[in-house]
Image (cartoon, helix red, strand yellow):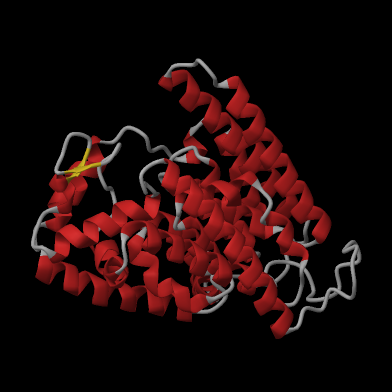
Length: 350
């Protein structure tokens, strides 16, 4: 699914014809993926292999051994990590094939493949979205082995929606913006397959997972934070898929971290927009890293939320509001509009 621009016709793009071929896209994807994998490898090496993907890898190992990942992983537990794993058990099933590799190698491979898919998908028809890759949002996602890269890739490669059950809050905005129903069908199929296997391995996982999630106080919903309600203005462009991407993302629980702003960078319709979104958010995150030094966790969390909303969500909202309310609606909206039209006509006695 593409957002906004006409492929290959961005008048502000400064180099070449801006008509990427498949071979060029593959080459660029491999180069950027290699850089991201190296960045992840060395960052993970500094912290003993810890990464966001590492929590899923460890959970997969415990689940395959017949254990309970939610009691085995976390501070002071059998598998020492700074945080308990908050992923649903189907995520562990999806990651199980990579347990054949050592943790550090598995997370590096995961980062490489995720980045290659995102780069290849985002360059379909235009190079302009490459401006998102030097951003703090992408760099931190790569360093941490974050799933945000893979789910951003699902915007352009719908088959990746089969992994939606791995991290539902992150996948929901992508599904809300889908231009056709195939993404949702794949998400349902993935939930059935991975969910069925997880129930066979650990039938009690929903209760154990919810207990961990409910104990966490790190999550919040962007539109409920200061300045967050302004994001709702994007609904004025309700026919545009990228408006629903932003709106759904703003309504899902998340932590205030740069990696949760990555998907917002891909609403850019032109090279200029992509540069502005990337530069504004990156400058804000860098500035925030300096300002929060010495603050306690409560103060720090408030500053991070302010940055995420003011310099990530709102710029993306403004970018979409500058566009016409074109008839490019998500597939589900196309189904609902005739239904509501019939209701209105019935209500008027026609």
